Length: 310
Image (tube, rainbow, N blue to C red; front, side):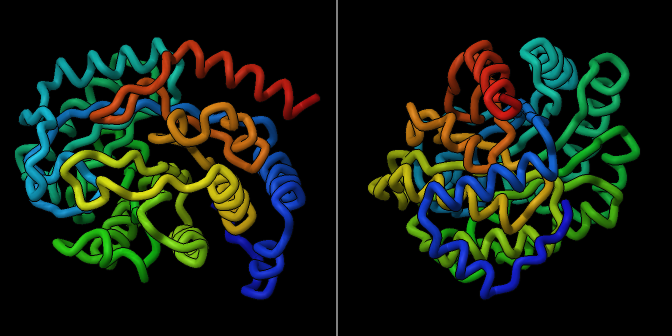
């Protein structure tokens, strides 16, 4: 991802713009940097629940006693089968996702086997999101054919301690650095609606710029019963559109991908998010929640590209 050359004063100036003007600048930036490119990814919940970490938004944490389904790492055949489904739905990237602080050596080896099988038999790029990892294990996955590692920073460095206490923001950055050093692309983003301010959203975007990530998934919190954020207020549509536009102007290139929460929060305004600089979707569901039918998303993509190039 190309670095932004916006100064702090520039950022303050664009933050002061009206939403229509801000979105217009962000869309021009997207089209200049990426044309009508539209990135689609799909994820597979390969290991669920019983996570030792206390991320305040997560239903898979063992700290909150949710009723989410728990199971150990899926078999190689099951993971490969999910990759085939992702390919058929039109995804460009398929990500193997596991719960927990990080994988055991046995799990790393099993995921590496699954990656190698997918690369041999399915025409799709393979990503993984396995938690905190070191460079050696990430190199093993890259050697197996992994293209990209996903590791969200979730929010700003300043707000992070309000959301997670069982590991640090630095742990997240160290994993991103290790993935880069292993020669992998990096996918990292976060969640809007955790109680953060606009300052926090800008800070998060600046950190992602500094990390030079290749893809930025943006989620919007859907409060889950039993978690500390059960009663979190829903951010206004105008806040989300402004945040997306700011991320595009700060980050410039690379995919900005809308993930969980887009249906529930944006609703009829989803198209406006893609006039504000977004250009990617996660399709086929979000770990513990269903998304809308993939065929609806594919129709949306075709229509959005026509609008961009009209």
